[in-house]
Image (cartoon, rainbow, N blue to C red; front, side):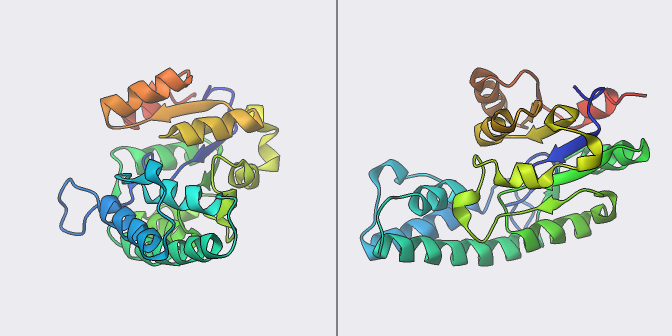
Length: 229
């Protein structure tokens, strides 16, 4: 897939950085505590959804509430959740830790004259800040796309991925998305873009493969070895 691609579209959290890493450097994530804060907003406002009890993914919680057909209080809760998540992500952007091999791949890919862009569900200011901290923001000649103001456009909606495409690279078949979730895979499939899965955890890799990802990697360094001449 890399040999045909003229542009790599990276998801941020996972392939590039452990976005919700703890400031103290411990292996745990701050995502569960952010998720708990969002669920508390739902409890206070009486919009608790049983299927979200115990969920530790703040993006999933926000997406489910934002796409709920209810109006009034449901919309207000979704907006409060969005503002809370925005604030948490601005803070998290200062502590995210690089995924091993990610910046090496980014630099090598661009050195070969290929295009790079980002399609992320994280806040756009946080995405830009992470790439600045890693010293690779200037390597992205394509769009760096984060979460839209209308959070109903988060992946798996194809909005971000379509915006991240580089016209000079050609159509979606000349791009490849690298992501770490079923949502990323579904988004790539929706626009006809090849997909490479990545995850550091074996269980998550198995889920990606079961969902239909044709290639799933356990290290971004595997991409370095696969770079075309």
